[in-house]
Amino acid sequence: MDDESLWLLPQLIRAQRVASLGTLRDGAPFVSMVLYAPAEDFRSYYMHTSRLAYHTQDIQRDPRVSLMIAEADDATRDPQTLARISIMGAATICAVEDADYVVARGAYLARFPELAFTFGFGDFALYRITAESARYVAGFARAFTLTPARLAQASRIA
Amino acid sequence: MDDESLWLLPQLIRAQRVASLGTLRDGAPFVSMVLYAPAEDFRSYYMHTSRLAYHTQDIQRDPRVSLMIAEADDATRDPQTLARISIMGAATICAVEDADYVVARGAYLARFPELAFTFGFGDFALYRITAESARYVAGFARAFTLTPARLAQASRIA
Image (cartoon, rainbow over all chains, first blue to last red; front, side):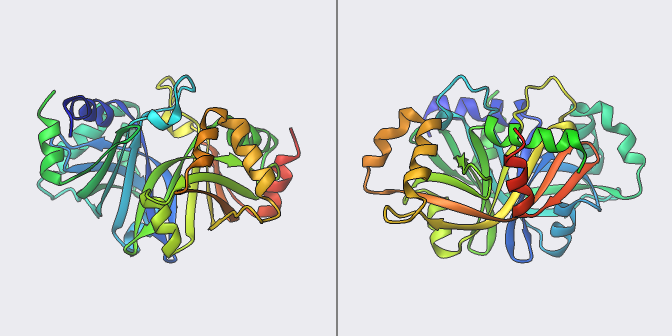
């Protein structure tokens, strides 16, 4: 990976608020929009979501997911040059007793303080997506396959 | 569906240039960014993509896809209120001899005239996603399941 692409990655992951989540629904792909907060080391991504949502139902049946974080299109640039990263991994519930719960809740609420009230809802739960691999497209003809260790490295550069 | 949500839908589908495509990769979901052009009746969505792209390889193995078109996040609004539609369907190659090829190519090039040169590349092909159902979220607590006929109806209102 070239230096510019590596430098862009933490900005992309931290700047966006919404991502596209791919889940399995009756064996077929289903893509929906989710709010997310990255863990400091970029190895995990947290969502706080209702059990009533389609994607939450899907995750409960099969934890395999893909989370794509993409630069928002402001319609001024060649859309092919928008940076994006597709993270593949598994989504698991982040329970109150888990080691990362307090940090995860804090990371989520630091991004979405106005959503603190949803932590009082019985049908909501925090989920962590644990990255297993990622495909990063920094721009036209700049595509890289990344390991979780490489994601963690990117989290430390800026 | 309420009138405001119905009225918003054609704007959403026509205004965006990029979408999130969910495919199956080794049985797991994979989400990537694609450029798309909707058919006039919103029953089909066209992409022009390289055989080398992961999502094209995936489609060739299993045609089941989900295409999510979402309002771009400009970071000024509650992100939960961003409108989005998740279309579920099948992706098939749109060959030169197919009845919809000329119209599809025209729709794609009307949106992306600067990409005309990619039609000269041997590894590129036009694909159509035929919608089988859709989940439309017009905003907070405004979610609707739509049939292809309902999509077609939305295409005629504006």
